[in-house]
Each structure stands twice: as structure tokens, then as C-alpha cells.
Amino acid sequence: MNQKIIIAIDGYSSSGKSTLAKAISKKLKYKYIDSGAIYRSVALFAIQKKIFDSDLWNIRNFIPLLKEINLKFKWNKKHNRTDIFLNEENIQYKIRSEQVTNKVSLIAQIPEIREKLTLMQRNIGKNKGIVIDGRDIGSHVFPKSELKIFIKGSIEIRSYRRYKDLKKRGEKISYEEVKNNLIHRDMMDISRNIYPLKKSIDSIEIDNTFLSIEKQLNFIYQLINKKNNHIII
Ligand code: C5P
Image 1 (spheres, helix red, strand yellow):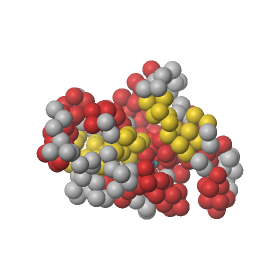
Image 2 (cartoon, rainbow, N blue to C red):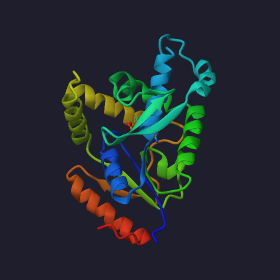
Image 3 (cartoon, protein in one colour):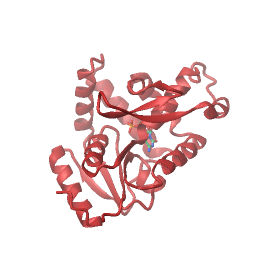
Image 4 (cartoon, rainbow, N blue to C red):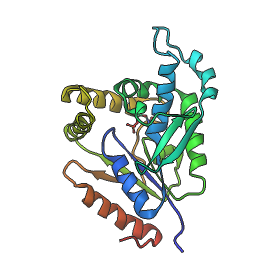
């Protein structure tokens, strides 16, 4: 019988990690965990608590509020996906707003928040059989994961893909704004002191600037076959 494994997919913002992770989890019938959605939920909570509304926004005021956060994932039959709930409210759409996107990397720099969210992710993955995407999954959250992939792509292609997605959703935003946000988030994610975005030495890098999703998936399925005698293709 195939042993269940943990597949960690890290990489830059809007590099297509979640598209790959979702497709792989479907194929293997594994759980998909979007760790970015978890960080975004805490950012939304901070916005709701008006943490950013004064110049004095201050970590000490926010940390005690963390215990009020109750996050749950529930299967959404209608849309065939997992939705995230913050204190019983479905926040699947709210966490993708520009407001949250602009604040999430600030939130992700706070050590107490990273500690709490790391424990949460480890708990979800304790029985393996998961595909999880993020920034520090292979290097920190699941350093012993059996397969680690690191995704990168040119800033132009990533910005263009994200711009197209946002336009499709009816957002009023320019290509330049999207590009600036990605550059800013990448910079904050790479340069933060605690568990930054980092390619761990045992991860396999895919530069998808000129690669279709099908080609990336085929490559990853071959890696999975080799890793664990899974025969999936
Ligand atoms: O993946 P996504 O773009 O939704 O992530 C939003 C932000 O959450 C990232 O820019 C990063 O600042 C933070 N994040 C993180 N560690 C993770 C996942 C996301 O710091 N494992």
C-alpha cells in the first residue's frame, strides 16, 4: 500500500503554487492546505479589530487578541472547494481583497503569529496525506516532508497572471499596482528575520516562466512516483 506523504510547495507570490497544489491533492485524494489563506485570515482579523488604524499600530496590542481567533476549514459542496471560516464566518472571498493582500506580509512577520500558525499547520498535517503550499513549509513547518518543491517565475509573468485573475473577478486594479504589490510582498517575505521565504537545499526548483501547468504537473507526478512508489500516472 502507498504510504501517505507530505508534499510541500513553497515559492514566490502568485507563482501558481496553489493551482499545482490543488491539482495534486485532487489526483492523490490528499487534503489541500493553503497556508497563505491562514495568514490572510489573521490579517483580516487584525483589520476587523482596527489594528492598523493608528500610527501606533503595535504588536503588543494585537498579540492578546490572537486567542479570539478560531479558524476552521469546511468543504463547500456547491463550489467543490474548501472554504475558510473565521469565528464561524465564511471569509473565503474577504481574505483575497486588496486590503488584506496589502497587510498580510506585515502580519506574517510577527513571531508569535508564525508560531501559532505553524502549530496549527503541523496539527492539520499530523496524519500526512497533505499537499500544503506557502513560503516556509519545506524549510520550517514540515522540514521532513517527503517531497519539497520550490516554484519561481519572472516577476512579469507572475504579475500578468495575477492581474488577469483579478480582472476576471471584476477588481479595479492596474498591472503596475499588481506588480508593485508582488515585488513588495516578495521583498518582505524574503527579508523577514523569522522563517523567511527560502528554498531549502533538498527541494526541487521549478521555474515556470515558460512552462504550462500540464508540464509542471507531469514533472511533479513523476517525482511522486519515484519518491513513494505511488503509481498515479
Ligand atoms: O500565498 P499567499 O499569497 O496567499 O500568502 C499571503 C502572504 O502570507 C504571503 O505574502 C506571506 O507574507 C504570508 N505567508 C507566509 N508564510 C506562509 C504562507 C504565507 O508568510 N507559509
